[in-house]
Length: 292
Image 1 (cartoon, rainbow, N blue to C red):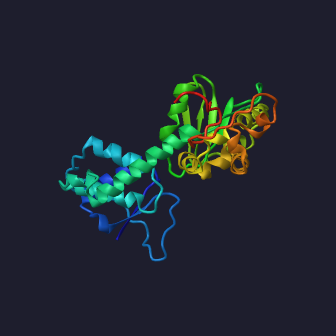
Image 2: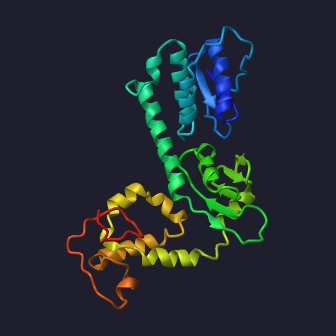
Image 3: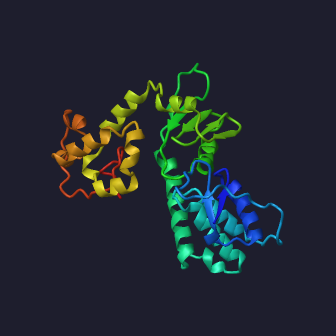
């Protein structure tokens, strides 16, 4: 068994995989070990990769490399093994390995779908906190805990939308810093970045929570849809996250008949009862009387 060690990056895996293909090593002959992976009890010492071409390098479709690079973001123990198995099969002329109907291709496309969804979660559920005006470093900071390694590829979304504002996103594994012109990626995430992101000094958070709670519409609460579109694992890192269980509890206790937040319902004025309210996904600022 050949033990293939590399730096844990897709670029490092690609270079090692290319050398192994040239040597004619089949997938069952290779044990992949990226940086940070723990070796097994009976693992052999790392085997040197022969970088001298033993044969002409196979031609690999550019489309396949793009798919493999995206799938490499999926965190699972055999992520590199599956990628090499697909690469090997395509290099041998079996292009069915890239297709969803194939046993390996099916796993590949499931992982691609999960990675795309996790990138969407980053864009949808990340909350930036502004820092004090005269503080050194980034103007905005955010902490996020993604299920897959999507930060490096998905964080450019914010550079396109926040202009020249400087910002920082830290995770338990890696981090990105936008200095207004260029994106800096660090893995592992520097402890100072993690400290800044986890202890924001946001003076406007109380105002945001008051707004969020007052615009909550219990008549439109649909718990199953809410938890599908906003997974519970993200709540702890959202400023409004601690409010959600309380607001849901109030809705179940009878607030749904008011069609508005409890604090608003106590105010004077005309009382409107929603007898035929259709449960919709949770929406803090939705207008229940707006034509749909």
